[in-house]
Each structure stands twice: as structure tokens, then as C-alpha cells.
Image 1 (cartoon, helix red, strand yellow):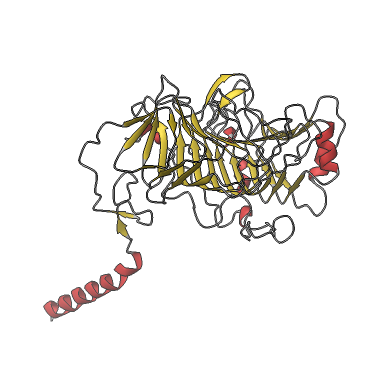
Image 2: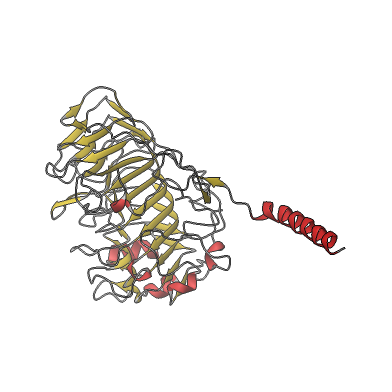
Length: 468
């Protein structure tokens, strides 16, 4: 009888295990982003496959690209000096292709007016522009960056020459100008400040039109601004600025595009001598009353400033938003955290734009700032009362921990989704103008994330240690 009872008990145990196993079964697959068969949805590692052959020497590209050209992922490409895609030419870049910038010659890719770049990666095979230095030895400014020039409008008296030294102008009168596609693209270790006000950014968009697609783009370790718009109308979705040196999203010369879903992660130890900001917005360098005005429309942005990662930060850090020089920027449904100053509305013309409801901030949170607000020296404008206007649903919280995000921020593996109890999971409003125009997704959450991590698979928050 004892043997029979033991046998019955064993059968029951086996049956219970068999029933329980499916409930906790994890999806098997390769969890290593560097593998050929990486699966971003896998949560149990197995069977990774790697390229075993040593890639051939990179193909060096210099001078001008004058005809339609294809770059493929079975090669690597090295940009030597200023490389131009000339008017009338299209550069097609296959998903998974790696392009490196030469350090001594400040390798830079410049897409001229009338030219196009079609860099269409995928979540599992992003296109990567990166440093030519070995892993562990890379740095901001190892190469120039990516510059795209278009024929959309600006507010300057003549078509400008792009900053940083390239022989390329931008501007025109076609707001729908099409300079191509950037989709699932990473730009790493670019950005060179050659001299004051003459910088090459990680990604420079000079009068790029809204016929151009900029979607799922990460700029990491830029030696100047991560993204900078000079005029134009180009829109963007899913933009990541990671550990840049100067400003993250810089807007000038009458840029009038739209962006939804933007993420900034700042390194507390790295800031620029000019003062580093999350947003820096100017109508032009002098704050002139000239149209088109810089009036980018932003929704669902999360800016994780240096104080979200450490209480000790570089003293060159300034503000999460510096709105100045007659800008009419509009920000909705967003969260800004961890800067010495949260919001600076700088100058009488910018204050007037805010008072006249042309510069707007709505359904937006400031959290964990040393000082929440600032105005120009000598101004008596009441920015705090303006920000807190009844019905605008803006809010201020004293601590970054009040947001319901993982803190402190990890710089190499940030946990970006709000906790189930987070105040960010509701409170957005995209039902009214200017957000109800078909471009913006209608979501309930404030900041860049709800319950889906759209950075999964294609981004890289530790490119310093990636073997390219």
C-alpha cells in the first residue's frame, strides 16, 4: 500500500508540474542585439548565431556622390573628409549597414539640396553611423556627423551655408520638399564644434521639408547638439538623444515641424562650455520678428536630465527648456526632469509670445529641478503663474521619484516604462488643435512612454563597448 501511495503521489506531482509549466514558460530566442538572429521579443536566451567571418576592410568613401548609389550591409563604409551627395543623386543604404567616420579627416556625410538619402533600417537591423575607433576608445567628436540640406522655408535674409565648414547651402520655398528617409538609424560619436557657432551636430537638418521621413533615430555621444533644426518643416517620431554634450533638441531659423515621442538621457559628467540644455529654441540669432517663426510642435517628450542619474553633476548644465529670442515653441503632454533650472523663458519678445498664447506649454510636468523657473535678468514677468494657468494642466513635482519612473536613471540600460502607479500613464490631451491633425497618435500618457518600450531592439545605450 505504501508503494501504491508513493506512486500515486508521484503521478500527481508530475501532473501538477505539467500544468504549471506553460504558465511560466518564457519565449526562447536570441537576446543578444549583436547576433544575426537577435529577437527583440525573446526573454529566454538560446541559440544565438554570429558572423564568424572577418569583415573585409571598409570601403573608403570621399569626395562627391554624383549618381544613384547603393550601400549594402555586406560591406562597411568609411567616410573620409566631407562626403557630398550631390543634387539629383540618391544614396540608398540597406538595413543593417554600418558606416564609420574617419577621425583625422573629420569624416562627414552631407546630403545637398536636391539630393536624397534613403536609409531605411528595421528594428532588428538598424543602420549605424559610428566612430572608426576601436571599442573602449571612442569619444564624442570622433567624426563629423550627418547633415541633410533641403529646400523648405527659413527666416534668414539669404539661404544660409550650413554650419561647420561644408560647402553646402540650404533653404527654398517648398515646405513639402523630400530629402528621403531616415528610419531605424543610429548616429554615434559624431558632432564637432570647430569654433563658436560653427558646429557639426550629430544630426543637422537644414530646411528639410515635411516630405522627408525621420522616424526612429537615435543620436548618441554627440560632441555638440544631438539634433538641430535650421528652418524647414520636417516632422519626426521616436527620436532619442543619448549622452550628448551640448543641447539635445535645438531649433532655429523658423523650424515649423512636429515631433511626437522624444527621449533624452543625459550624462551628469558631460556638458558643454556654452551651457547644456534639453530644449534650446531661437527664432534666429538676434530674436528678430521675422516669419516663419520657430514654432515646432512637440508632444510626448521625456527628458531625463543629469540630476536623474546623480546628485553630482557638471556645473555647465543649465535648463531643461531654454526658450528665447522670439521663439513660439509649443510643448504638450511631456515630462522634464532633473536640471538646475526647469524652464527659462528668456526675453521680452518671448514673454510676449507666451502671453499671447503663441508659445504654449500644456499638460506638462517639471520634476526634480533645483529651481523650477527663471526669466531674464531684470524681468518681472510672472512665469510661475503663467505656467500654472488654470486649465492648462501643467504641474510641478519636487522630486524625480514622484514620477513613478526607475530612478536613478541607468545610462547604459535605462528602464523607461512608467510603473503601474505612475502619474505619467494618464493626463494627456491630443484631442484639440494643433494636435488633432492626423500626425499625432492619440494616447493617454504623458511623456514618451506608456506600456510599450519603443526603444527595444534598435537602440544601443552602450555603443562604447559594441564590436562593430
